[in-house]
Image (cartoon, rainbow, N blue to C red; front, side, top):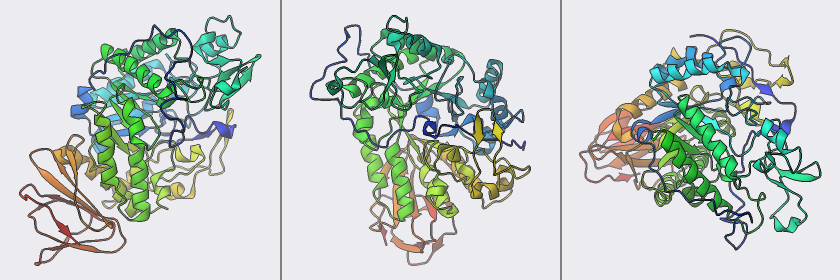
Length: 555
């Protein structure tokens, strides 16, 4: 396999490293006060669009997806930066080795930072990743290998250096002044807080993440029309859908006066946006980043989105594995899904372990590969689309600051890298952490039948080949009376599978009174003639129990 030695870049201003990371729970309620009013502008032009059907292509066909941070993934030129052609050269790893159905690319539009979350041109390709011609080859190659492609759409804010904002900051008479949120803040008490407002030219503009990321004004119909145009452009270029960055901040808490129903305004915008996207391509997919563990808060956004990332599940899977006890992860997931269904029957949940804004799961688990393997077993036996963050499948570590959780993907162990770092333009290369320096890459792990990577490959294949394990099969709790066991049922209506995880570091035994066929065991299954099964520490079994009317587990 081609070796790509990649370099992750650290921006000089450390406070920018969050790259649109959000707090885990919203501080705002449905509105900024007791009244459901809008910004005070004439909003009679706003229309509440009907909820459109979710993407049937994704609903019916997509089980497992893979997140790629492009600059960190595969380098085809040797400049130390990942690019489109690097992904093209390694497409068989995605399609054949892993067997994933889609990829989500973090931003690739032109930008002033390594993370690309401050966009200067919404219709272009950042030169770090290649040309528009390279992008066209990339899209064609992915589609030829039956991989759908989602782009990270950063429409909450732009770069300070975007020509639109350069125009906007010229003064009150600038043609794009109202494309962004400006205020003289004479009545500061009208706002919940002035946090996020930045002085410029005698006035203030709003940018909650960073003063170099000014936020758009969605009370301007011209802005909305431009976002329609951007979506149409990329859909016509072959993109299959969008991951919406910072979705709950479109109308942000401190951006509008008290009384503005910011959640309702944001949801209504996404109803409009998804309506337009589906007009261009009915199969296009929209998945939101609404970062909170409050499932009821997230549920409303399903009115305007096919899917949302399930941060509640991410939190639950991490704490479950850290504690070695079932803290109600299945009950919480069922509760979340019930709430989502109140917004739309055809919701598509998106479950994941961690992403580019969170400490990597291997670091959360203190480098315990057996627990990381169990994390994969839990994730890939859940309903919903399962998302894998690049490097998760080989056990990469990474803790804040952000460049540490976005380090170069390890294709193999050939080549060298200086942990002291070197200079490159205006960026500094972040140091490798010790674990990743010693970690076997893809090539070495493929040759090791007991590797974490081979566990991921086997589980993705099981998920693809066994309908009860797929995204669309049902989920049901099982009473096992032992919080060291995590047990649940999955069914596609024809077959029913029982999944049992031993979360502890000791053997766990239980009596059973059902018939089964073994589908998968992460460790050797121990049984006796008295109807008892013993699971080794941190092990998982998957059993076909379709012929049993009732499932009882007695520890």
